[in-house]
Figure (cartoon, rainbow, N blue to C red):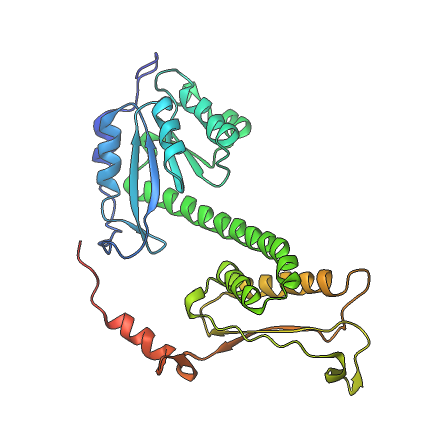
Amino acid sequence: MSRGAPKADKDEFVDIVDDAETHRPAPAGTVPAWRILIVDDEREVHSATLFALKDIIIAGRPLECLHAYSADEARSVVESSPGIAVVLLDVVMEKGDAGLQLVRVIRDELGCADTRIILRTGQPGYAPELEVIRDYDINDYKTKSELTRTRLITSLTTAIRSYEQIRLVLESERGMDRIVRSAPMLLAQRNIEDFAEKALGLMAELLGKQAELTAVVLEDLPAARWQVGGRDVQRPTALLEVNITAGTNTAEQKALFIQAAHAELQRQLAPGSTLEEASYVIVREVPAGDWGYGGQTQRARQLQRAAEPAPHA
C-alpha cells in the first residue's frame, strides 16, 4: 500500500533472485519445518519470497511459510501458530507504521521474545534504519531492493540459528526449573514405583531420553556402607549415575544436568549444611556398539535407521 514515497519496483524483487544456486531438495516429512511468517500487503512480495525460498534447507530443516497481509492478520497468525522462528515484516501496510506497531504487539503483548523479526521495507523514508533499530526490538533491517535471493537466505539462516540457540537456552532453563521443583517430590516419595516414574520424566526433560526405553535402578544404602577416602562418611553423601549413548548429548547439556542435579541433591539431602565433597553426579557415555537392549546394540539400531529409505511426500 503506497503512502507517498513509491514502493520498490515489484519486478525488481523477483528479477534479482538470480544469485548462485544454494538450495537442495528438502526431505519430505522427515523433520519439523522452521515456521516463517511473511507479513506484507503486496501479494507479489509473498510470491517472490516463496519462489526465492523454494526447497531451501536451513540448519537441517525445511521451511514452512505462513502468510499475513496486514498487521491484524499477522497478530492472529502469531496467536494461533506457536513456534514461529522468523517474521519477515513489511513496515507500510494499512498504516504507515503498521509494521512497527506490530513489532511491539509481538514482543510486549504476545510475549514472543524468541521469534526473530526481520524488517523489510520498500520505503525506508517511513522507517529510518538507525531510529528503528534503536527504538524497536527487531533483529535485522533490510530494504527490499537489496534483498537478493542470496541475501535473503543469509539473513534467514542467521535469524534461524539465533532462534535455535535461544530456544535451547530457554529449554535448558525450563529443564533446570523442572528439576528444582520436582526433586523435592522425588526425595519425599517413599513408594519406589512413584520415584522411578518421576526420575524417568526428569531424564526425558533434561537429556531428551525416551522414558519407555530408560531403566532406573535405585539403591538406598545405610551410612555404614559408605566410605570416602577410607573413612566413614560424616555428612550426607550421594552418587547419581546416568548412562547414555556416546554422542547423543552435547557437553553443555551434560554440564547443565550435572550442575542442576548436584545443586538439588545439596538442597534436599543437606539443608543447612553441605554434602560430602565426594558426592558425584556421573553422566557416563557408553559407545553405541557396547550396549543395547532387546538383544541389539545401539550401533546396530543406528545403522538400521540410516539404511531405511526416506519417506516419500
